[in-house]
Length: 163
Image (cartoon, rainbow, N blue to C red; front, side, top):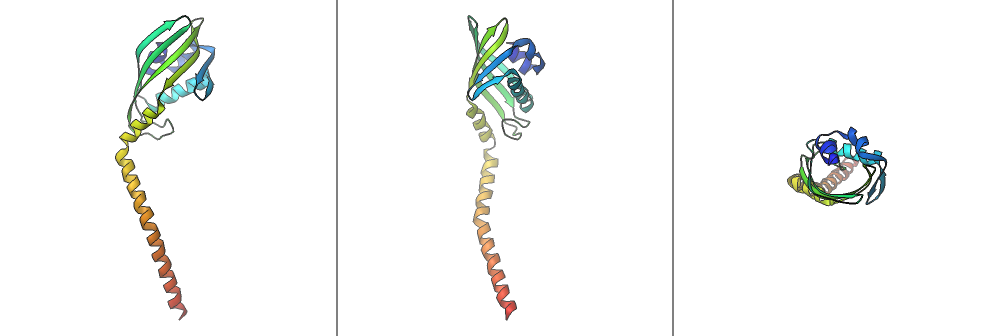
């Protein structure tokens, strides 16, 4: 619970050394990550979502394993997730499984649908994106006409000046 309450909700990533084992590995979908990489990502989330709040919905333990179903709430007000600030209020639900060794988190497996967050951003920006698409469409439609007109004027001007 300290991960969610202290690192994210209280924005105290420095307590990670008390919670995680130095041999910690985050077994991510795209590969394994060290504690340093994992905590850099946590700091990036806190920066991108300064009002971040993590809620634990369900926790269960069996042997060395703890499973937590969590909910992420935050407003995207700084650069993060490959996007400039959008002002989008995001809510994502996920699940994390930890293996605890000697009272510290040694391994982590987390899963959440990243597409859910991106879709919330797109819905938030839909009118801006629609306007941008309309502007680009008009630009693509109008620019070739302008170029043709410019070429005709130049050709006409060259013929007139040669006579």
